[in-house]
Image (cartoon, rainbow, N blue to C red; front, side):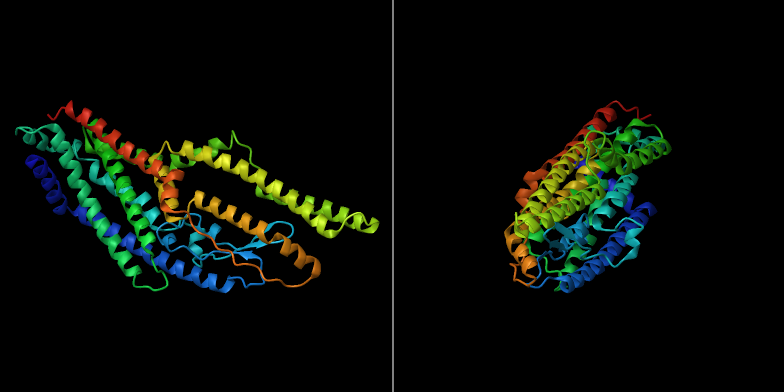
Length: 421
């Protein structure tokens, strides 16, 4: 145990004395701080929008306030905070609370999730790519093993020393940012939100640890640090950017989902057909407009349900394929825990449909009598953390830990046979 901490301490001191450590850590602190500042401003703007578009009691509209945790993971937040207007035809989606930052239309949203996904993963690789190959080039590995110490302790000591060098500054700047946010009364992080943030930070550390393990693994496969860094940059680009997008492309080859435009045209065709039939029936006295509206309502519901079922199958297949990359599991886990993921959006849409069903008779009556009615307010309760874990977040977190263990074990078996000369 003493030798393990000696190796870990040696790595920490070596990093503290290198310019690489200060450049990388300064960049990390700057990016996370900038992300918090930008996303905080974005949240405040969307909160102001919500107070403007918040419906009155005579408006059949479902809209929810912005989620404070969207500061950390924007995800599908803008889709979820749109206004859902209940009409005789269907649920009409309005723009709702949109970001006022036009740069978000051109570049990726610089939230906490994006910074960790891209920047911190690269930082972890930079700390791990030379842990074996460069030590061999310098001849320090031969000196280390001149002492009675096992290779397992050396490898784990290196891993732990570098992990602490990356994770401690990351934790400090993140916790300081959360503390500053709590001073703003408009954000109001609840105890549940604080627990979710703690889980997000833990999963982020697991994600960082994976890339550190991957860096050491590649370093143990090569004899030169220059070779290690070239291979790792290729693998990093493949794992972070390419593999998480393969699932959707492949899934679309197996699941046929109609476009939103096709669905809209089908709705319009149904509406036109039923209106024309309603005019004919009214002349002959066969049925009332109320009966015709109910027919339209039923037909629209069938169209929506068919579309949702096909879309959900596409999403499930895409997610399962994308999970070949731990980056996809990281994104799924963090967005769901933050309440801005695909599962939360689906849950919200189901709640909106239930709300529509509960007030539809009043909507028809108001439309026929051309008068205003009062409607119950739409109230949405986000899924509990336990429900989020049961719906897949726990699997994604465990899957990331599995990748961590696998790559560290592989690094060990390679390092045991590594020629240090």
